[in-house]
Length: 276
Image 1 (cartoon, rainbow, N blue to C red):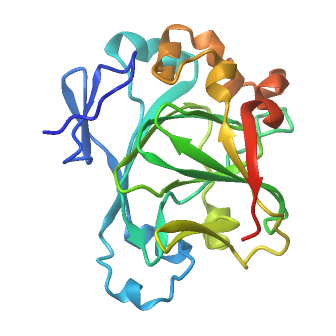
Image 2 (cartoon, rainbow, N blue to C red):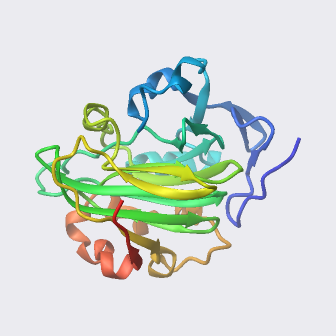
C-alpha cells in the first residue's frame, strides 16, 4: 500500500495510490462510484478516432466518494445542507486528450437569480479546471482555464459550468464542499460534446483546442486560483477544517448574500490569454 499524504485536518482519510477505487475513512473502507469510458465516449475532441475502437468501454476513468466526513461531524454537515466529496482521477489520455470529468452546471438557487457555487481543493496531482458561463447553450460569455496543483483551493463561481482535467502522470485527487440541496446538471455538456475548450497533449505539452459545437467562444483566460488566501487557509491545510466552522460555508447555500466571494479579480490571478 502506497499512501497518499493527506493535508492537515484530513488525516482521517487514507488513500492507496495503487487502489484508487476505495478509500478508508476513520478505519472504514469506502468503495467509490466509478465513471466509465462508455459514459464519456461522446465527450472527446476526437471521438470518432481509431483509438475509440481499441478502448474497453468499461475502462474506469475516475472515482467519486460522496459525503466523506468524520462520524462526529456528519450530522452537523447534513443539517447545514452541505456535503464534502473526494474525486480520484486516473492519469491517462483518451486519444490525445487528457482524462477529464463529464462536466456539469448547477441549478439556480430557489428565489435567486444565480446558481449554486462549489468549493474545491487539490489533495494530490496537477491539472486544470475549464469553467464557462454560457447563454442559450452555445454562446459562451466567459471562459477560464484554471491551473491547479496540490494545496490549491478553487471557488467555482455561480453560473459557471466546470470540467476537471488530469494533465499529469499521477493521480489527480480533489475534494469539494458543495450544497446538498440540489442535483448537478450534466445534459448541456453531453449535448455540446464537452466544454467549450479541450486540452490535448501535443509534443508532451498541453494544447488548448476550441470545441466547434459552440457558436461564439471568447479566448480563454489562463488563471491561477487565489482562493486559499481569500478563505484564510494555507496550502498545507485542508478545507475540511470548515467542518468545525460550517458558518463559513453558508455562501455555498445562499450565494446571493455573499457577492464578494465570487469577485473573479480577487479569487483568480490572470496569467495569460490564449487563442486555441
